[in-house]
Length: 216
Image (cartoon, rainbow, N blue to C red; front, side):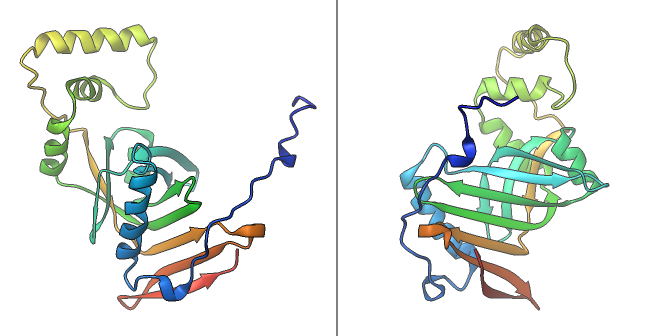
């Protein structure tokens, strides 16, 4: 039973940022994202790339988790993971997802939805080899999302692999690499006073981006 003294329904915050107007939006949602992302990097450089990745399995059962954006351009938004993970299994069954950025302080949220494709192995390999040695070791020994009897088992596996690769030359596993979400829909949300938030959605219509304001 919840503590009677912790009534979270009474918690409030007020949004006081300036508004978002249609006339201020870029015609291209990628350019609009870049503009907001640049400001997020200045405001919160250690957290600007954090994004919620929402996937669903073949029966529509959802899963969501925080991952880090590692690359984006006009082709889409990329991240890296173990293909055998829950998200990897979901995307194998249902290659469609949504990512969401929330930048606290700027009172901004961006949702991006679309099909997901695997990146070429070489793309993932380049990023893998650029990671710190500890991150490469962890990725190489872990079968992400699978049960393990203890942390000690994982630490032993890392130690053994480290000893076997003293030169630091750890090959990127075939089971590890990148995904790219190819946007079909962007939503830009700006928090406003009295919860009368500004929301604009970009959706593809015959190859062109159409912009609509949404009610909050």
